[in-house]
Amino acid sequence: MRQDDLNKDVYTNIHISDKMVDSLIADLNTGKRRSDMRFRYSTVIMALIIVSVVGFGSIGAGAAYMSYKSRIEEMTEEEQADYKQELAEDVYNCADEARTRSLTPEEWDRYLELEDEYYKNGVFPKDILPHVETLDEIAEDELAFVEEINKIHIPDAELTDEQLLQLIDHEAKYLYTIEQNAAELAEEEGEEEDPFVPEEEGYLSFDVTAADEQSIREQTIALIEEFYGVEIDESWNIDISGLDWTGVEELDEAWLFYEVTVTESEAPNATMYQLSLPVKEGGLFVINCSGKKYFAGQTEYTREQAEAYVDEGQQAVLAFVKEKFGLGTPDRIEIGGFENLDGDSLTSSTILYDLYYGEDYVAVEWNINNKQIYSVIGKGLL
Image (cartoon, rainbow, N blue to C red):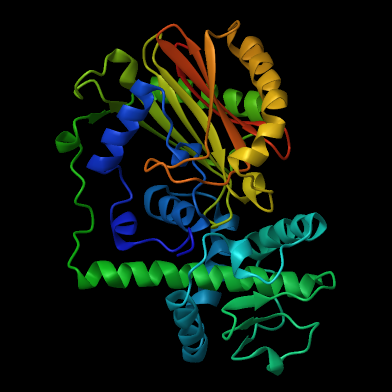
């Protein structure tokens, strides 16, 4: 199953489940980190969160998004059948595994540019990506999904803009198929639309005053620009809510915070930033990024391969926490990000550094490819 292939439980309960709450709290209290705390959401999860939770006021962005939605919703029955079959046969962990070769860095750069044009301006390919049964049906320089190898055949020659647009269009339709499939499964099982009850999960939401909301917006915009060099203008949506986890056993007032989600647009490739800002001094602070802008086309490493970059990353992380938070040398440093909760090995484009200062710790994620800090979590940082 590819990471984009959501099961119905994830789709129908996009909020935090009992298991996730328990494991998140356990991880933070014991100095462990979930691999998904890197917020490397699949584009489908991002799309579901953005469309169903966050509202947008930009008419231009909305019109472009509807243009894309109309396109994929108007697939022919034959196209829909092809994508359903592809989903049924999907056994891959990532997009690269589902292709006969990876895109080159130059192709990825053009892919991301064209993907923006696809979602924002309605720039679509002239033809759809073909689905064929065997390799014999296509020439070596043709792009197509081939059923007998269960992969997209990508020719060795550099892809044209038209071929890249066909790949983008294919992914958009594939993700739509996943979303529809999940919705159908949920309906068959009679799942409630939103069975989540915060009080039963051990924490409550609280109202954010207008004055606090304005202050939080300003702080959020400043932090994103400081950490990522991105200017957030009026076209972005900023959603703010208050969360009180102090009702959960062993959690103190540090777990009273504002949860902020900043989204670029309604498109599945949109960039998203998520922050947790403490209500009181000494509280929990989290900031991280997600979206193809940050993770598409990056090389992933095993833990053993990443060892060659650990010292470089550690120096960068220590310089970062000293500059941003005034922190000195930690008592000890642990390296993570290459295992899930079950202890299974993972590959990653980032290294997670847990910096311990007495009983507290700060977790910082550093990207091996572009040498940037991607996420920070800790108490008493702001």
